[in-house]
Length: 262
Image 1 (cartoon, rainbow, N blue to C red):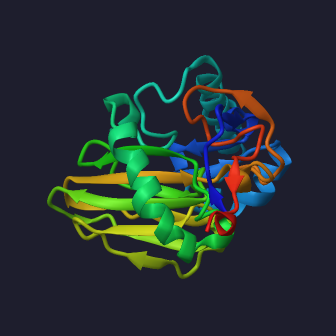
Image 2: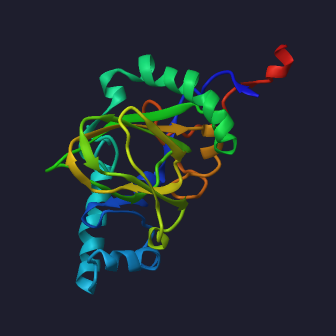
């Protein structure tokens, strides 16, 4: 089967504004449902990063999480930010590069390759994306804590400039950050990219020197994510959104039996 067309409308999952938050103070991407779940799932790693007494935890709940949530709810995200974690960069659709650049890249080049590499993760059925460039530099973002991508598959390409450090590191699929004992590290090479599953725990080590720019493309397949949101791991609760949204649809993409055409 091959995709003959794409859905006319895309949505996001309501969990974007209620559960998945990046707490910059501790460099950690957390799933937040209630205080008991937060303590159970992230207590050890938060303590290791300085959240050690009850006051620290209360401030985390009252300030960090609530502030993030309020920002999400009153903002039309991303407001110039490439995602909820990086502060410096640009969304390619804001530059008018989605249709002339990123969509052909996804449809003509990435999809045939990913259909072979990741068939069970929607590699052959990619129908939307979110593409952005992130910047790491002294005095700006220097590293990125453990997190998952809101994507079935991710492409991360080092564009430049001259830099040291900042290696990517990887854990397992949907692994808890506290269990990340021996991560796999991958050094950036300018002009080369890394393909990985969006649900694979990963982060970026601190930049040593220089300035690093990376193109990141979150690749999405509605036939996969319509059944299970990769961020809250539940059936998505759809919310209206513009453009590709977060890649969820109310209907399956039209398909055609390629064998019947021969």
